[in-house]
Length: 290
Figure (cartoon, rainbow, N blue to C red):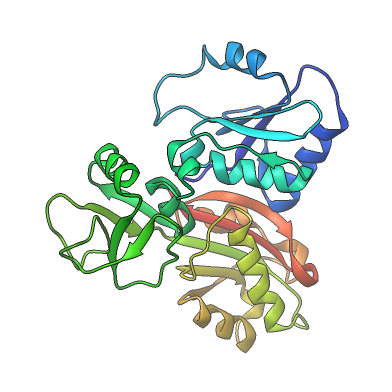
């Protein structure tokens, strides 16, 4: 569901392109030419439409497509706004101090879509008729959610009983006609000096998740160097995220020696955000179950 491999396209070199690429990389996103999940165009919308018309196949397989006006004043998600476009577009708009223009029906109503609700809460949609639920949300303006987990309820969603729920998060309430969502497994790789305060570790993890629009407080694993074993700070921070610490066999204990790609591979996760510096020089990366 999450997208982080971004290709930036422009028909002419402009400083905004370089600034956007650097800003996204500083957050941990991948700027790539190969197999991008997000296409960001610094071209006219007519040029973008002509280019993407040959690439659009289906809602599930299409990339997120975002158009940015040449002067950077407006950022407009064109394809898959509700499947990551609104969040990535919002990040770019904040960087450029520009206006984000959302055109989906839910955005115009001032509410989040089902996919956006799942995104911010770190959930995956396992079962159910999303299109039918979309229609219900547009008609009523709100959907009801049953869960025993701590979630964020943006505009368009409210907590309810199992019987009344449109969406069930978890396995405690299984009834026909409801959308089933379950929490995704997230893994943070983290490198730091022993002098780093625990508050900086906590903030670095939160800011890593926020970098891609995730507000969950549940992490399955925090991976760090074996040289940090016995450090009460990281154990205490892990407890605040209901997480288990894994001490990886990294050769060195320097903060620059975090090895996100190989260290997260054995957990069979997709690397979402690459290694990047956070508060107090803490280095993190983020993975999600493949």
